[in-house]
Every structure is written in structure tokens, then in C-alpha cells.
Length: 107
Image (tube, rainbow, N blue to C red):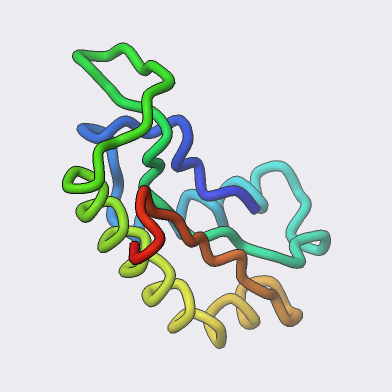
């Protein structure tokens, strides 16, 4: 299950709990809970920038990307702590797609 991070601008980002709720609700609404095998964490994309409400393809600078790296790691940590909850929600084991990104190798 995708996290929806691509469509959420910086000003529109949700809490990690709200994102997980959105993912679960989508699976129930469209009746594919039995098909869910992986859940993606809610990363903060660094290969595009938002200005006003317009998104453009432009990689963040290294110092700007620190925020995205911290947010992406926090999202992965949150999701990794939801293993039992997701097993209960879906009735089977689900795996995670935990994002990794950065502008520089150290990130």
C-alpha cells in the first residue's frame, strides 16, 4: 500500500497515525485488505519542490534535505512499531517498504 506521500505537499502533510489510518481506510473502502502484503512508510520526497501550490521537479539542497531525512526515518520508525496492529487489522502478516533517501551519501 502506497503512503500517499507523493500527493501531499509540505503544507498538507499528515501525522504518521493519520497516514496509516488513510491507508487502512482505503484498503477497506475498496475491499482489498486480503491482498495487502506490504505497507509503505510516509517519506518526505526530496526530488521535487513545492512553491505556493505548484510542484516542480527539482532536487533539494543538502541542507534542506536534512528535514526530509529526519522525517523519513521517523516515519519508518513509527510504521515499524505497528506490526502487531497491522496483523490484527488485516488478519495476516504484512511487511514494510521503508524508504531511504538523501542528497548526499551520508544522508
